[in-house]
Image: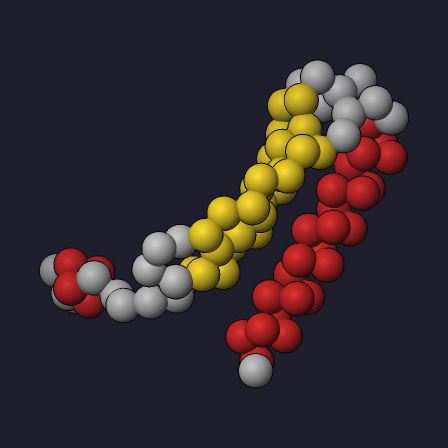
Length: 77
């Protein structure tokens, strides 16, 4: 259950950041796209465009899991 609790808290942080940026900008609003990863997990992509101050910016969250590729498991030399 720990993973889920961490994900919930990070989503709250994403919400707070987006809300604060919308207030600070005064015009721009974030649009959200939810996505899922076929190997496990997913996330939320939020983009603000054409704001009063922020021309384009994003605040993203992802929680992915699944099998680690062999290439990533090999130590660097």
